Length: 348
Image (tube, rainbow, N blue to C red; front, side, top):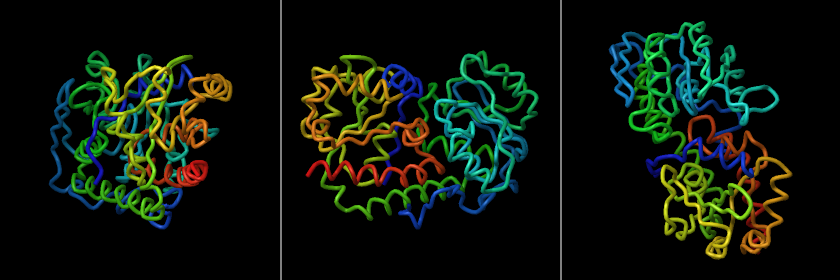
């Protein structure tokens, strides 16, 4: 079973990438939108409203089924689409987008449905309130985001705004899906989507029984001489584990860096990953990769020395494989398996 965990912060991923940076596929082909029945078959509309959703920033009172949805942060857009609600607007994420200007799994899913692509607007500290207002939303979904209290107080006057239940960027992936499904009047459909994700990952693992015999560590750097490892409960590590590989137990022995699901251990401790058969990592560009791989201590890590490395060097893939939701999981699986197969060959 997938474990409910706190995902790593988007801020951490952004910092790391800036610094250095199906089913197998019968059950989850490329472009699968993850929906379990179009607009959903749960308690949508009938008897589902009014809905009250409390968050750390305030309570959203949703009186009727939303028709115009706006999403902030990450993951909410994908879950809304899978539930049959293509947003009218979404926070942009240029780093993870392709030449279409959208994250490809979102572009593919919306085009497959024949819907209009969501209008994108700036987020974060530069959140474009005016653009959101012009979209005339019925609800604003931001359970996995970094919106501030000040931003929330403005947004809630535009439409009921669903923020994070505890801290910014700290909502579990499955908790996020439950919150969104409730906000859209489809609470029962959340379980269906989560079950489908589990089946997709399980089918992929069953197609590669040899994976269970290999351990891995998922690493990152924040500059020359640095080395960090994502802990076993972090989303990108969890996705790889669900494909059948075993997270090297050593990663959870390091002191956790506060506010993250990772540990900065320093490149001088790279030898402690000696029992990791595979290394997973990512790079921001070719220049960063050359700089990182040129470090003597980095090259000495056993799996890296063998070339048993799964390294995402395309921003959309790095983004998709860093979060679990109905659209990113099948999209990532299709691309992950050949990369992992190639790395395992190097271990021999």
